[in-house]
Length: 424
Image (tube, rainbow, N blue to C red; front, side, top):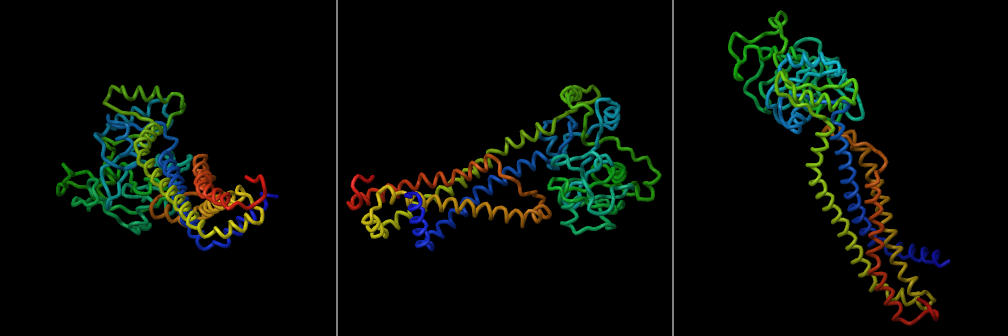
């Protein structure tokens, strides 16, 4: 009975002060939305990092650190310290423990986007996310020497379509004065958006990569020695070197043994690294920043709760007459104090519910747009344990801070001397 009375009185009090408390609830809602949003985004970005490449057991390149190898092969950031010989790639193909290989050749660009020389094994074996294959939104994978397939981000940013002619540039810079003008490429395919660096790259065949560099020395085209599309058809364009290799093993249990053997390869110095291990190390280096950002957001929520205390204490001076009436009708100091606890809890719960609704609405509305325009993949999913913990901590913190105005109201009501004998 007392609980029902307390809820009824608290509801009436909230409704009576709805204009002021609505602003407090709005402030708290925005703070909780920011806190939960950053944690949600943090989880999704971490998942995106770890899902950039999947089902690839080893990445093999010239001797270097594993983070450097990961950055230039997967994230297209930085450059290789050296190339590996084509003969080494042929030796890897003879290793019975290796199920498939994807050769990767880097070094050129197209209007700031990385050009990746590879073969059809890239479309067949490369996986991202939870083992998702690459799919074409339009056209087909390259067949000829001068065919090119564009990532979704490249096609969207540069408004390219099937059949367009493009001129690749020598080197990896956004601005280049050395262009492969004699060997234009034709767009034959456009990949679907993946939310990974795949979207921000241009894909050609290894033969195409070799053809555009015939007659080039030290980054300069020698007149009369470069190839044209007609001359390229009758020339051996087997590459002499490639940048790296993605490898999938037939038996996953042999991964560490194969890695050790490749790191000790006698033909040339190689580095073989596990993408998952390197991605974990990369995320560990970035985690300090996201922890600081989460801490700042938590401070914003605390500030909002302090504002809630200030409002309730300010309103308390206006509720002296209300408290006196409640005491005169037999309400105990404990009942009056509980009103503040219920009001704070109700405001916090309301803010949390509205925050969940706002977050779900924002992801539904802007998730596809973020994937299409920025390659950021956000999907609706159940909250994780950490996210629920953060959300639940808000009403718990509201109950704690509500003890201050509740205790003040309890003392004020006791000093008025009304109510039933023996009340507390």
